[in-house]
Length: 267
Image (cartoon, rainbow, N blue to C red; front, top):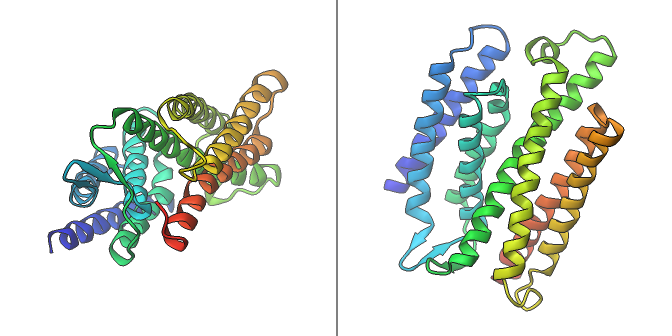
C-alpha cells in the first residue's frame, strides 16, 4: 500500500508539473521559477522514496530492468531541477516529467527478474553510478537535440511557431546542448574505464554488446565535439549526431537489458 501511495503521489506531482509548463509554453501564465522548483523537489522526494522501497534489499541492490529505469529517471529529473536554476531549460520538463511518470507506471504494472549487485562491491557500484549519470545527462541532451532540430528547421522556413516564440535563441540552445554533451562524454569515459577495471568476464556475463554500444556512442559523441570545434558543426548536424549517439547508448543498455532479462530471463 505504501508503494502505491508513493507512486500515485509521484504521478500526481509529475502531472502537475507538466500541466504547469504546458500553460507557460502556451502563454496562458507566466513562468514561476519558485513554483517550478518546489514541484520538482517534491516530485524528487516522492520518487526517491519510492525507489528506496524497491531497489535496496538486505546486503544487495536490485538493478533489474524496471527498477533501474526508475532510478535513471530520478537522476534525469534531479539534474534538470538543478540545471534549471542556472540555465534556461525549463521547457525540457515538458518531455522529462512524462518520461519519468512512465517509469513509475511500468515499475508498478510490470515485473522484471531481479538483477542483484552486492552493496559491498564498490567497484561495480561506482561503474553503475557513473553509467546512470551518463545515461541521465545524455537523456537531457537527446531532448535538447530534438528541440534544437525543431527550432532550426522552423527558423529556416521563417515559421513563427509556438516553439520558436517560446524557446531561447538558437545559439543559446546549441550552447546548452554542447555543455550537456561535454558533461556526458566525461562521465561516460569514466564509466567505460571503471567497467574495464572492475567488471570481469564480460563475455561470460553477456556484457560485451553493452560495452560495444557504449564505445560506439562515445565515438559518435566525441566525433561530434571534435567536428564542432574544428569544422563548426552545429544546428541540424549537431542534433542528428546527438540523437544517433543517444540511440546507440540506449540500445546498448535498454535494448540488451530488455532482451536478456525480460525475454531470456538472464541476469
